[in-house]
Length: 567
Image 1 (cartoon, rainbow, N blue to C red):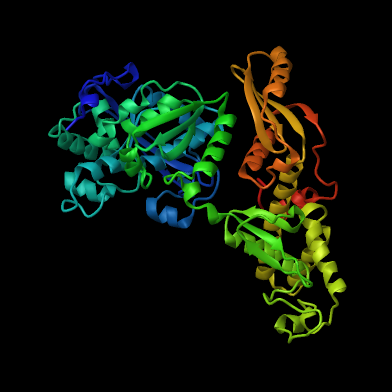
Image 2 (spheres, helix red, strand yellow):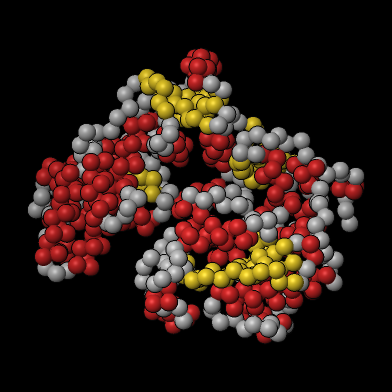
């Protein structure tokens, strides 16, 4: 039963549904054939589309597309489309504008729409064509909402075509599949008519499947500003349940009550929420930083990051006569003896394996005595450890290996990198290419972490940094002290940037070197923001630099070796 607050709640204009009867809606049912399933790696080979309105076919669009490359044999076996068939076909750069003109002003329909629309939008982006932002209807989603499990075993197009007795059978050719999808769409809409769904807006709401209990809380978004910031869902006892961020607080919070939430436990969170608190921010960067801080402080139960705080791992060098590499969950107190954070334990283990391949550091976990020797393991016989346990190496000699590892953390990793590269060359000469490739990838992973750690530490050592980002409305300003965001503001014109920073300097949060956030997610987030090409550095108080012989100089080489173009 609707609550009293819900019954007398007057929706805002952006919540009021308009009436657009389905009989008056023009649908363009589209299907694609491609060389694979990933838009960034595969190409479109055929487009088929049917335009319908009120049950009548208004037109059809069909063409083969030259993918500009080979078609995998299994794709040819599935679709029947050969390389000879597409050799003289137009490229997607010629076909896509024609299709967009054919579909203009329509609602796109596809079976598993994320696949077809995903390829079309990716092609538009690659060609620099603005995607019109069509409303999209997915017949797979509709079928799952409308049909019972005892009617169909699954929602594949072939299965639905048999259920609705389509005139055209699906054949893995674009136009045939589009024609079959038209009949499936009409069959599903006929079923929806008996459930009171007669307009496009009702159809979209039906596919979102928003519960009445969820809708009844839409008043919680009332009064929130259309501004960037952080929103906090609070329980009856004011406990923070969930913290999120958005460029438009009101629009984002409304989505929780007007669209279906598929994330785990979000429905439970919305049911428990009694109030939504908004914290407006100058811009998106400030909102993201405040979100990180609020999650770290309150650990809301429905935020994934607060539910799994232990997912960060560090590689630490122990303090003992014969130090070893240890995996820990907290950053070491002495920043020079640790490396991280790693997103997972396996990533930390991979970095440790790369160090083991470069240096004869012991891999045993026992605490060794400088007086009483103990028996050596097989690694000593293989030459991968100097056997400090048997005192074949003195503590001073062993410390030299450890110093090379510690030096790679904060300064020069050349000793580690060059040693591993020599090992890779030896493996390749011995025709052990798989082991060489594995070691290469481990080294690349280690260098990535070293680069990130050294750059983050460098930012955390800067007393004060002023940076600005140009936006349509002017400039977004950020004042950073010792790796923490101390203040944020906006400037309408470039002439107001410096006066605004002067004001921020006087009123910003005080941050001292003892509060340096060099190990926090905040510093890493600020570093990613600063590394964007459009960011402008206004002023730096202090020195912001990385070691001249640091890990950064190995970045490009190892990026090529590991075959990562975005390294």
